[in-house]
Image 1 (cartoon, rainbow, N blue to C red):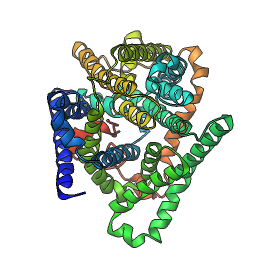
Image 2: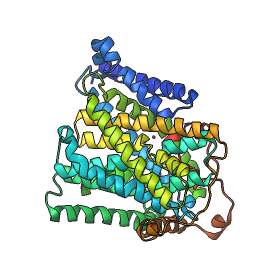
Image 3: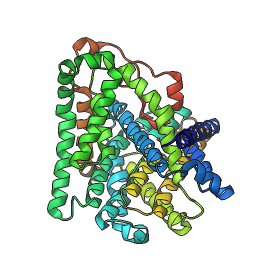
Image 4: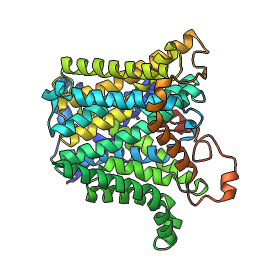
Length: 480
């Protein structure tokens, strides 16, 4: 790479970052999710806008020399890995306790039924299939069922609903749901890569992913602490941030060798970091979150927008059919589930709308599935647009509901319908396990446990700047 090519590459990064941050600021001022503005900034710089105005300028900026695409792709994947890593160590499950009636119902309504419908209905979108049949069905099931914790959390923060039981129930259900769906995506990519060509292969993939999860959550924290004290003791003392990033990269590298999805591995690495004593790593986590959500993640979302070619890759009928069908399935399923759990119809509909928010996870799904060759560019565009439009719709609906009735989201405890008790048992068990897991972090001394902390798992309050930006990440709270 010569000096001219290097200058062109850095110029492309500068423009992507300016477009992402500028678009995010504009959308935030409009009370809309910042992540959508970041994608919009990339769309303006991409073939959808700049490419139509001047295809030569677009090509010169973003495809001017052979290595530029690979360099931008490296930033794309690094941003995606850091997004999932940071989301993992900011996850918390405190809000799940005491909400046993509604959370299992929402998990069933937002995950089980939509996933089954998406899986069964995948042949309707066969024209957009680019890879393995089973992998495509799994991706379509995930696409219908995915919920964005970050975007819905940002909406709750903007509307002052984060401390409401309504918000806690949504976030608790979405946490369980997303952990399950990310593991399914890992299986889908393994199937696409030929690692699970038959029933035996699928079983091996599931076993490897399950073993990876068990080792990550139950053995890796102790091993990481032991290594830090011995082999890398001096290094970690000099740079806890470097040691933390090393842990993330080790997880991702190990996942690649074991053919486990690297995005799932980054999320698990974040969950491992959440088990370390907060008094040591809270500032480190904040530093990583700041550099991630203000630099790497905006570039990632801008690159998502840059990849969208609405002039040539947009299939109107396919996109409209997917958005309408997937939204209707999940809206009806969640509404009925919430109603069966004891809420009134108005509140049940609110649950259905909120759980329909696809946001960042929907875009991550589109990115991973497209990069793996499971879906074509038309379905990639449809999934991204579905994520954007459902996020906008949720914000507008909840804002309108709150404007009409300031008490609209007060929680009323009602006994669940009898038919829901048996169906909800599995989801309730998962919720209990997550709560216990979050409270049984090894290595926390009694004094640290007794010490008052802030609203999040990291103890101290996040900086005001990060709170304003953090619609991408689960917060304490929760909040791509």
